[in-house]
Image 1 (spheres, rainbow, N blue to C red):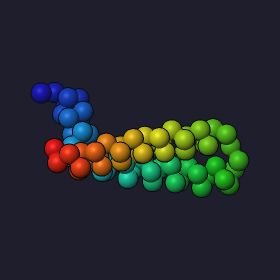
Image 2: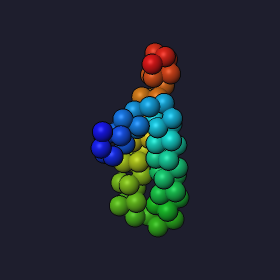
Image 3: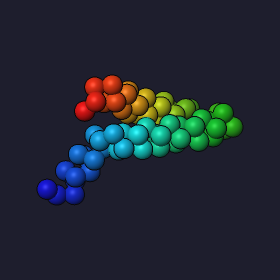
Image 4: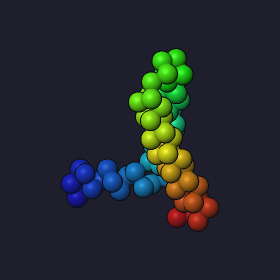
Length: 69
């Protein structure tokens, strides 16, 4: 199994999803702080992208925890 496949497999595990969700939400928090300060639309767009990624990872994690996989 090559490194790319290992990474894709890891990001679907419970710890992987938890780390990705927290990291994405933290990055969104940082960029929302910057966006509010500067008023840049690009920063707001980056916030939306990272917020969506973080919420998606969090929902996948919750589904995995509920289904006990």
